Length: 419
Image (cartoon, rainbow, N blue to C red; front, top):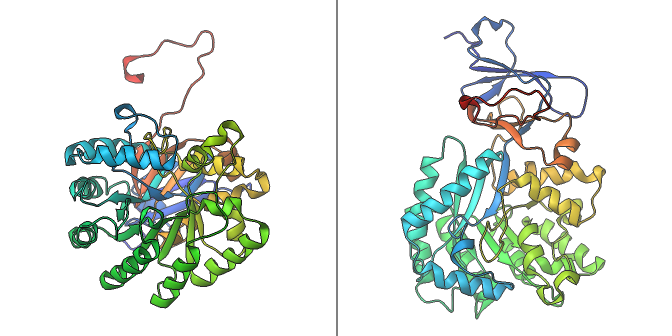
């Protein structure tokens, strides 16, 4: 093959809000310089000015307990939701988890997600059954999505005998990192210490559910940051929810932002779940309860927003659109057009740093994981939650969404091939 062979040329792509369109050349799954001779282009697609973005990055989702809405009641508090799912997961089977999670993965792919971190509960109730299913899914959908699996102790560690050994087994069977939930543990700080020790022994990253309430008077962020520095795990620890930040004063937020930045601990907000579960006693008067991660980002913290749960007692909503989640965050935080691009980074480059993705972006040499949206700017795509029209994983078409059509008077009837 000639050196200037191009597998795919995407012509007339819009990469930013400027008027100029560009051509993108892809060879062996990566962006390469445009060839001087186009005779060796194997495939050319004219994007006609559509917006191109790197594939979206989901940093926090629960595939194993998704789509349970029809099988159980609706918990209105965090404790109720944990209890309902705890009872149900005793009866989870690999086949059941696989079927529900596959629907979520496919929905996410169609919404432009190409990288995903899923927490999978590993404890004496679930055993390793859910893990077995998600490991299968990781291989089955590798053509369209990179799936990272976090072996997760939802219901504690010190108070849940057998969980620690199962976490070790999960890592040896193929889980990529560890997750914990100190606020459900009888000894939360001991859980933090044990999980850091385990992560160091297996050389894996950590992702904690942390500070999921609206009491600003105490926090486990200090313990997490101290352990991160002590183990040299900077850049390898993420904390999710951290809704206490939503109730803190400006000085406390600044202090924690600087602490998190210096410790290299990233933060993920989960807008849909955090809005639904926080402040339930106040009903429609309740506080938003979403960590203001855009303020953390301004002081150097790596941040993301993510889906968390999909149609279960924790969150009875979800279409797996990360663009919708980022839009929801901006809406709740009253962020206007000047802040749309930074919010987009929370499902893009910022989220990619949390997952420690290499070669993420649209530069020469980056992996050609990209989504195409029928929009003329990032702002338009963000404000209108424009659905992706198509996506390419390593330069290969991974999904395509037909354009919707308005049927004006006189429009011809649908043919069978259109349905």
